[in-house]
Amino acid sequence: MMGRTSSIINTDMPEPIGSYAFYAYSALKNVTISRTMNAYSSAFAYCSNLESINLPDVVAISDYTFASCYRLSDIALPKCSYIGNYAFEYCNSLVDLNLPAL
Image 1 (cartoon, one colour):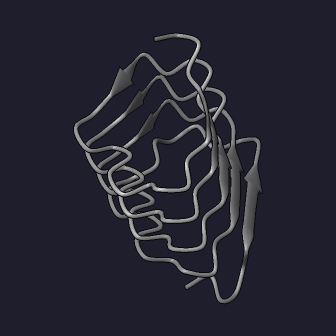
Image 2 (image 1 turned 180 degrees about the vertical axis):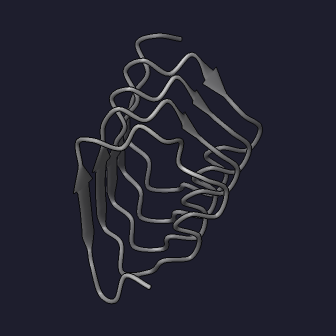
């Protein structure tokens, strides 16, 4: 387990972000991960304190990837061309969504 880590900054993660990888990890506030191409189902779902996420190389996010991230307000997915069902369900604080590839 990651303990109380509130930020993840990784610029060399060539593997996809697996299903439920950070599911319900309440300490997580900010994420920046480069060089990963996909974020699978519910990867960040229920991360109740997650505020911002930057996935500059992700081209696809699956169903429920960010579902119930109540404080998520800023997302940058500049290369994303596919968004699964309910990917942002209950992201009530979302105000800035950067998706230029769509």
